[in-house]
Length: 358
Ligand code: ADP
Ligand code: MG
Image (cartoon, rainbow, N blue to C red):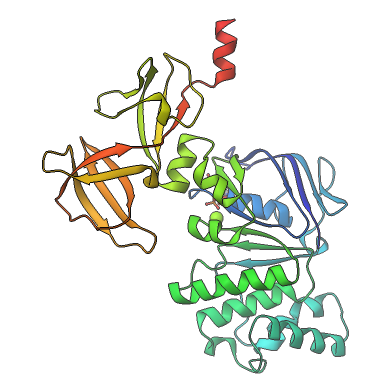
């Protein structure tokens, strides 16, 4: 088990595409970190750089106490002692399950007796007892993914790297494997970096979530912190389905441009200055809807949810997402919208503004 330390890691692909831009990230020994972000944000690039398949253009990576990559070194993947699972399970079809799982041990020349013992132990760990002689092609998708997980774990890796490892599975199975992945990695105290485009999965599993966009880190936070206090309007939209309004803060509060949305200062949960332009982010749970035949908003969809109905209203041309407990509104119903908390993000950063004022 080990920590993973990335210090100012940048990666530019040969064609000039910036994959990673000055990534600073310290993952503690035994921590479960989820990497999320839109498609193309650099998740796979970051994971493959930690794994050693890609060499950073700048910066330094440390795994445990050893520097595995810097300006002069790039330790080969097989010498980093990591376990890896990808979305498309690369299981050899002509080998039985046990032989597939034992493969990394064979590469490192572990004795046959020890191999058998460790394969049996890891098969029990991932719930594949009794499957050793099965042909992998006769297994379900979830079982094959367990084979891939067992193979990643059999060498006692320092860190487990998962790239969309559950994304190809269907929902009930994915949910089950998600739970197992957490109990399994927590029970052995494994350091995990789990890449997913599924934000609920990231929030459900991780100690900390890292939000990437365009190769740089937008926010690192615990799941509750990330959902309640997103660091930017784009994180608020991506992670929490916030509705965004452009506008300005003045003496009476925030007023949207070209939209009736206006809120008082008491509602603004973030710092602001009078006269400042910026984006208001409104989280679904911070909106109240009241049925009103003269209401300015109309319900366009209303989905049942266990922790509140997921309702979208069209409010003067803006789709506002709301979490509504109690009666589920009907599509077409008219509503008034009340915002009881909102986050304001100035367009220009405060530092830049202060610089300009001076
Ligand atoms: P994600 O896994 O978050 O979807 P990737 O890490 O795969 O994103 O990609 C990050 C960025 O790097 C994207 O703009 C992608 O197009 C680009 N990219 C990925 N692989 C290569 C490559 N081999 N050559 C050039 N650009 C690449
Ligand atoms: Mg990817």
